[in-house]
Length: 179
Image 1 (cartoon, rainbow, N blue to C red):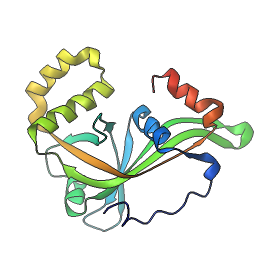
Image 2: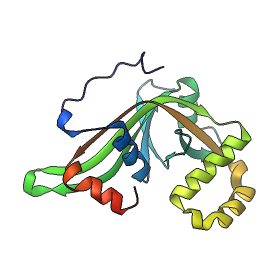
Image 3: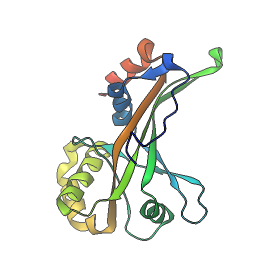
Image 4: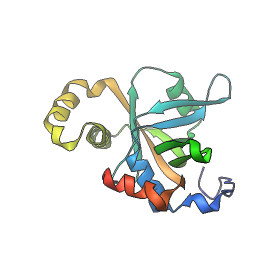
């Protein structure tokens, strides 16, 4: 599926639509994403949380166990998927609303089989969630446990983002967090 083949409904609340650049800030700032794919047994939508990371090469990676799973079977059967990220959410009962920042990234998923890309992807995931200051521990973890993990990649074909209170506060909050 390429972006030109994909059908994307225009966003109803265009006043809350983020630029691609800001949507990718949301992706980078999110600790996890919900991976949506087609359940291979039922054909119904399925969602699972993953520790996804936007790497410097512009691809999104996450890891999973290397055993057969519903997710792996689904992605092998149909590579079209999307990741939904939420970097910020604050209930606003006074406004009967929520201040938030979210992004949806759609594309095709593949299992990473190239060992150099796989290692770089695992390091990107670890750097995002553990921090680069723990690189020595990550090296050791990779040396002893890397064979136990699959690495998946989604190449972004369509990126959208949406936020309530982006300009007023959410963008600043993400900046304070380093994003």
